[in-house]
Image (cartoon, rainbow, N blue to C red; front, top):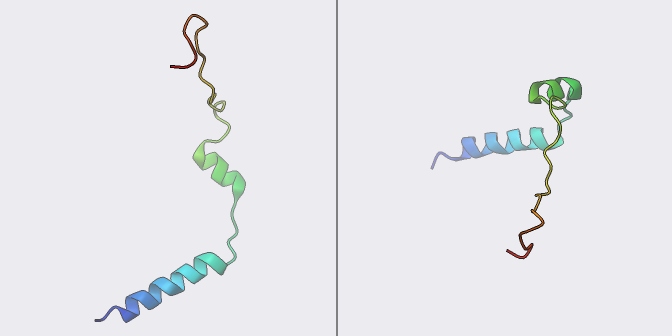
Amino acid sequence: MGRGRAKAKQTKVARELKYGSHDIDLARLRKELGAGDRSAPNDEVDIPADEPADR
């Protein structure tokens, strides 16, 4: 027992996050995350020609 208030608060917070309007400063977020500081990693792996590709 006693979980009613905690659950009501969680529900309230979840609704605020889901439906509330949030002003996001994308330029500041990019700067904080360090976007653009370095090039994106290459997802492809180079396989040497002398090794078979089906390893």
